[in-house]
Length: 520
Image (cartoon, helix red, strand yellow):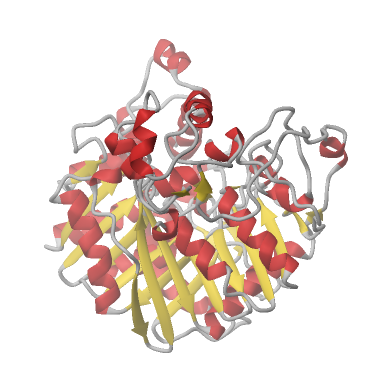
């Protein structure tokens, strides 16, 4: 346990020093920042960039992402709007409380699972917490237990509980059950809009583990994350519109408008913004995952992927075409997800772990070995969601490369065309790739299975032919499971969408939802 007496003084005035310490980092090895879009990484290595973590006074290599947030908060002159999955940083909460006391209008949206402040639970309640929440509670105890007696009193809880600090400051907080649901997906956004002019966003949750490291584990350095500060009123307005739809409109998930991407000139950059989710009835090409796919398809030379999760088959198929055309592809995926049977990282490696046919499993005929997992301190996660294309274009945001991010969660996706910014993301990728574990690990090689001979999957991602497609191909269509696929096969031939309505279980709406996805 860290000596709480040693951490008190620094904690008390860290908010005042955040901007100054942040400035001390500049100019000592970091690539020059763009005037309109600045990028920060909490696990930068080998650049002589470091900071002292305020809660335990531990010196950390990398950028202090919490200082970036506090600087943004302290810069506000009129308004702050925040949409963040989780917030448990007391110093950020204190900075917000101070700004609220100074008359700044502040609104906060969080994911409903993280809305309630901590209160001292009794032993029975602790045992009833699931494994994740028990871990979070123990982390909070490690942070807030000033007298180190193993328990939290009301004063300790109030002092360190970020949500409680916001509530005492009378800062309004909303979560994704405000639409009357239990939360259709995750409110997974990670952005702040300041004065309608500046946006701070990226992959980082505003948490100890997301930025500095697990409080009870001194070896962790924080999940590998980044933040961007975008100074542009037009971009800020786009984020404000998304915020208002949730805050004023009380709409989350697919209840929100499902709009096409918007592109802006921001200083030396071209920036495209799109928000998720999209109904599964929408053409995939119009969705955020579709935008990722179409951007990747423009690659001429190289693609570098730094992903927490990769489980979107159509993107993997696009990458396969790129690899066949000669594009050099390298990928790093978080170790906890890289080798799960649904991971498309396995496709790139040519690995099949499934005994049955699966429409979302297509191991490459010509696999690559430049796929692996980064070497991380035990307890940290590779939480990035970015790609660098040809050293010129960056795909990033809160958006994991998954169907859930595309069709359920409230997410942000950004495409930034700027070579200087791309170089910073490329440097972040390269530092992890240099020490990464690449290729098929032995424990996966021993589990490989032969692909069943009847697993015929369409060679393209175009419309599925109702008259010739296999059941496995038909099941790739939205809303079509095994029984409906078999019904479609038994009802052949078809000459149009209306013919599908003779299949039991397919009505006018479901048939209409397949428009553009099928042919005959």
